[in-house]
Length: 297
Image 1 (cartoon, rainbow, N blue to C red):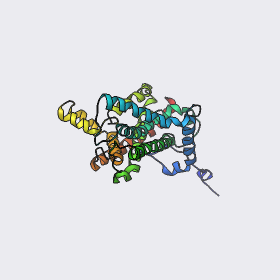
Image 2 (image 1 turned 135 degrees about the vertical axis):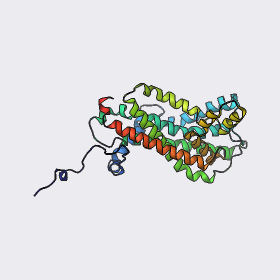
Image 3 (image 1 turned 60 degrees about the horizontal axis):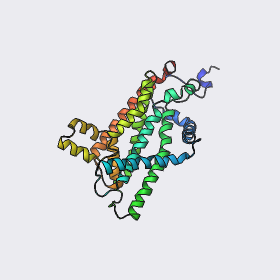
Image 4 (image 1 turned 90 degrees about the vertical axis):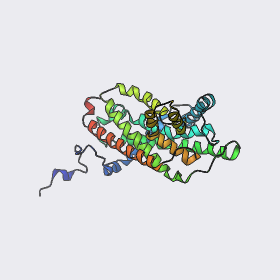
């Protein structure tokens, strides 16, 4: 009786035939490993710290306080409509943190996991995906902090004229998904490039910090439009900030929760298309690098 050699194997590992390759069936088969990496990222990050998970609360709160003092009290930037400046900044930081943590967490995937990749086979894309999923827990905690302060300003202060959340709040899952694929795509591109160009690993944190200032995190987009109209900044710079996908996301999040900000379905569609393109480009570069990165990392 003749039987093929492959009939004796449960799985057959073979090179990817296409650069745009994302085998969801294989990823599902390794879902336990994905959850294991998520658990590792959440537990080990603050395992030997004194405050532990409290840093999830401390970081956005202190950043919001500093932004409020510097940009709103000293620089006198108005956020409009009687919205508390602290809550305005907290909304921007909450949405920005998830994106930035996804980039920074996935940008050194190959370098940080070279020992595991060199010994055991599993879908390599699981590693950056686990970072994106584990950061959802941090995002959930920070969203809870935002909701608590929102409720405080609504029920215990009479200085704020907060409106109820907009109906567009139902788009929040799409917003989170868009931030995730943007962070994942850019992170995979950077991770692939750092296997050959190590200098990029030093520029990631600096580049993300600069990008934050161009994403309307601590100021409203309306301010940029005013500066363009006054001639204080060029139309080109204004367009870069206005059509920055993270600016669109942050403005939409503020519109959904605080009733201020720029809302446009056209811009949301643009951000979604841009995010998908970046993700596919990141997947292509990641899959290409995966084939021979162990020789260069």
